[in-house]
Length: 274
Image 1 (spheres, rainbow, N blue to C red):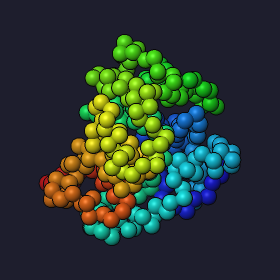
Image 2 (image 1 turned 45 degrees about the vertical axis):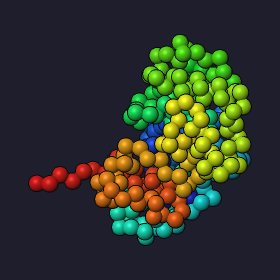
Image 3 (image 1 turned 30 degrees about the horizontal axis):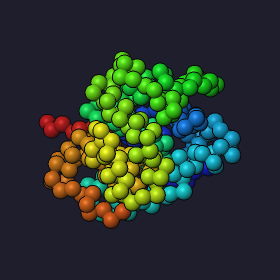
Image 4 (image 1 turned 90 degrees about the vertical axis):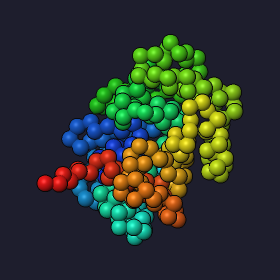
């Protein structure tokens, strides 16, 4: 199916900006995205069109929300760029990034895993968890495993989580599963609480601090004013904004600005002085 699009939408940037870990370029600029039990293959047909592997009903029911297509990112990017010249450069470099609306349980476990890990290492661990515990499905291109549900992980042990590259994070994952199962954390009702309450509840999980909680708030619950401070953002604040937390100056959509700054800091080629 062909989808008309008249807004920022760059598959490569969305897949590599550090917000999700199962998006993958399959071949020839065809990208795979997974959410819940749905899989889509998507490519850029031309400047104004996307080619997608699903039908119109699934696109409207699932993927329009997932890709946040009700939001005009070109307009938001222009608003962010007007705040600061360095933000303008980051927004231009990161143009095409969108904040995905991801499944909360997978997002929580993925960012628990992300601590002190590179993106490739996080991706490897997430894929290994899916392969060990998730349900397999066949697509026209590949066999993949969905990310496991809480129910599929309810009896997981430290031994069963071994060999997945999780290290000390195994204990954090088991604590998250237990708190969700016993009802002390309800991922569904979190969407209805304010930011501070959400972060407080998430941080009751062992190993979840400010950075992980803000990642979950931003990437699973679309709290676009939340700004996770990881090593790349900390470097940007220090090196590019003279130690000033520029995100405090952004009245709204600071989390979107964070993604532009992260992407630029991580991927823009460095200029070497002669």
